[in-house]
Length: 399
Image 1 (cartoon, rainbow, N blue to C red):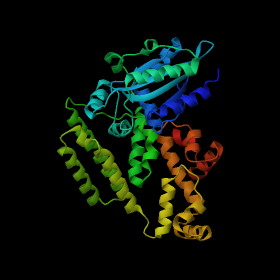
Image 2: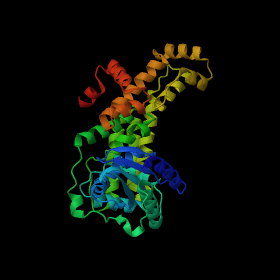
Image 3: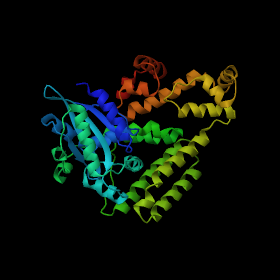
Image 4: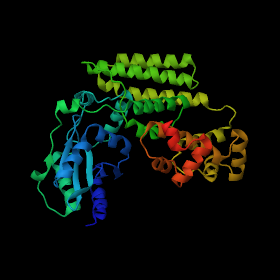
């Protein structure tokens, strides 16, 4: 039975009811595809909260669908594609909430997981992503789950056949393995590097590394105090990175002090929620402004900014010329005269800088990084990377 056409139709149909996404994993737990715009982060959360492990363990032994809950209230559901009785693929829908969730609920949910290390960087991204997770009645999710199972197997089941698993026991959660602290360090170093370079495209650049999570958590019985302390530490790190990026110490420290005071004045977790992202974005934009080359004309600076913001696309001089109202011939000469590089070389070097961040801060494959930066093939990407850095991508990652 070819399930792919069924699943394509199913994915489109449930999207009619809201942002309910579908995911496909192979029998080893490798994510094969999804239609979720926050794929990198949410797939990391699915793994981090133990849902992927529980799904695969259940799917290898059973044929009926399963519901997978978390202490945060986020729910996924999975159904299984078998071949000769063995698990071939697991198909997932979600995440959703059964009811509106508060920031306090998220804080308490994270504390439930004990040794799971959720840094301020990861928690900041979690808050942003959760805003887009839909609220769906349990009966509707169960019906979607039954439809998913039918699309995969042609078998009619009832809601009672769905194994809605309870949350893992606290004791088991406390035994969760520590995360690779080297990956944690590299992910957070990449985040601060975005500040140093004033990279306005930081959200796309770091979407995958946010999913690694971890860091040294600050624990307290007072959730508000814990959040304030974490945010103040984060502000301090970003402030120093901004100074290293060229922002004057006077401006950086004054700005950091303002954000720290605002943090301390917050009365609720809802007051704190927007502060980390607002502060991070503010520092990056100020560093970007101070790093802008005053020798560049407004038109060439606009082209440079466009390239930095569209590294995932093919960069063509003709498009840049249209952007600033020049002919392609005039723009290419003016760009080379002012920057010392051709449009093609400037875009190439910018893409390699982004690739270096992704290699050091994420688990993305070289193939995926090449594709994400619009290189035609992995071999071409590797050749250009070695020309620019003197190392292959894998040598750079392992260095």
